Image 1 (cartoon, rainbow, N blue to C red):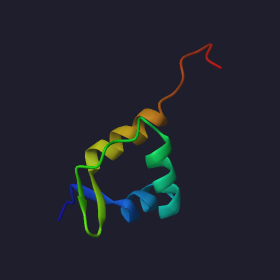
Image 2 (image 1 turned 90 degrees about the vertical axis):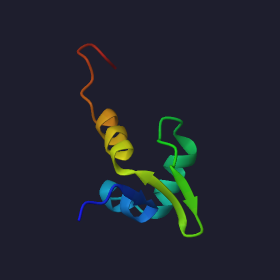
Image 3 (image 1 turned 30 degrees about the horizontal axis):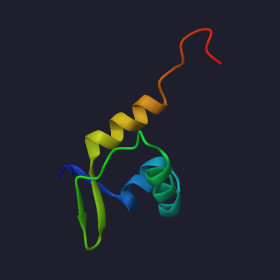
Image 4 (image 1 turned 90 degrees about the horizontal axis):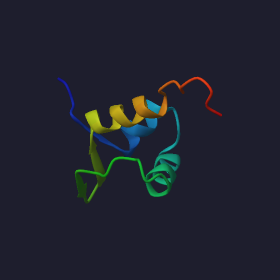
Length: 66
């Protein structure tokens, strides 16, 4: 079964960081995707949005960038 949603725990596992760090990134990085819903169990994001965000952050820098 393919999951199309991720919570903080799944994002933390995907990034190799703690759930607390995911919260810091979410609140401190304006490029981090907005959650699609906030449930009593917490916020949830579209997996595709998170994967695009990760890919954009890991994109190679153009030559001559500092």
